[in-house]
Length: 378
Image (tube, rainbow, N blue to C red):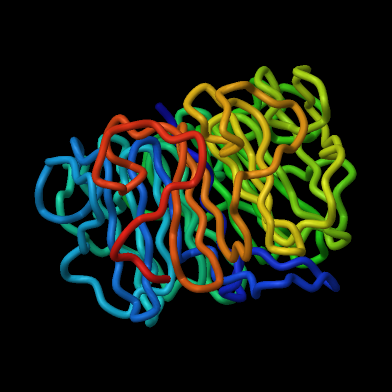
């Protein structure tokens, strides 16, 4: 299993469509995160909770036992954002400190070691951060000035420092212009630049860097044809950008229709998601993608073997389908094979794979439509 790319905008509001008005206000996306087999949320008090798979300590509760219901992450206070990798998690505190926990074989926890951490530890060598983005086995953060640093696995250049050597401490992303949003996933990373363009780096086997090729890059390189991006999301080997018009463009792997263009053909350059009304948010899972529409509804597309599209079926879709009975959505997060969303009343619901309890409903039963989680109010 692998993980979605978490994305946080430096403004603290992860997804916002310039000029568009959402029926519910889109909340800071950092309040909700989904990993390969676990999920996390930050409530309105700044308290973080996680649930699901915990074999590597990704729930941060000091144990390695799975949780079918949300568990509070101890030792954290005033949390602004939370993000989930395949088997690790990170949180951004109000003062700009970044803390991580879980699987650490590539140094993705950022404490200078390769030892798994069952409790939250501070990332070494980071200035105060304004955003975090977590890939499968690497992590990134951006400062308020728009500079970015990454740490963890770097076998294909996903840290963006020109090397292919793992780093257990943050390294500078080389030559990146001022960034306003970050995304990270399988083995690539991306940033929205202040001028609305997008730059990506790392693996490009399926065209996930969006430059029209399948050649990987050790440094950030521009994505073709995007000049008005306001948010970005990364799946394992696909990427999507929300444009100022409310349209969404995607690129990379497309075997399950996760690009939403009506085909299952990989695309090394951006293509438009078809039949999608104006959106205000985008999120990407392993091989699926979801959007919040400006009326507060949610639609998803791509792989659906576990019901992660939320339409009541397990049939893949190469075009967006409605998430059943879900309205007033304010945040959405895609995991390995599951999805979670928050509504304007603060309630959270999840759907899709539930083998490790990642849906948080107290069972291990997969759900093809949204299932409420008790005890979490964002």
